Length: 147
Image (tube, rainbow, N blue to C red):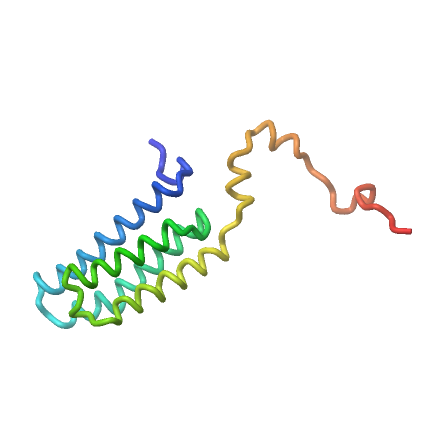
């Protein structure tokens, strides 16, 4: 069975990442407000687990596919919908700021590790890779002499 990253479909993978992230965020909210009704899990969930999960999700997607608008904008829209419609108003506006900062830094760090050459090298066949061959860095014939 192929993994999701082997299909190289960034929009589908973005949708999966956002769906898992949103489900985890709502799960944290539901568990801390309805199940435990304690302040300690609420604080731990929204001050440590949620920002680290958001940062990791943005980092993981951006490292693989680069900085794409169809990951950043839906994440921001879903965070706003959760805040205004689903009862996240207990968290105050820090939820929106925390989401924006975590996505910003996660995508920024992931962008540093992203290389377009990796994705194009994966698309090359074995025959094309073998034709590229090896060139010694000491071979002076590849450099033109300046006059």
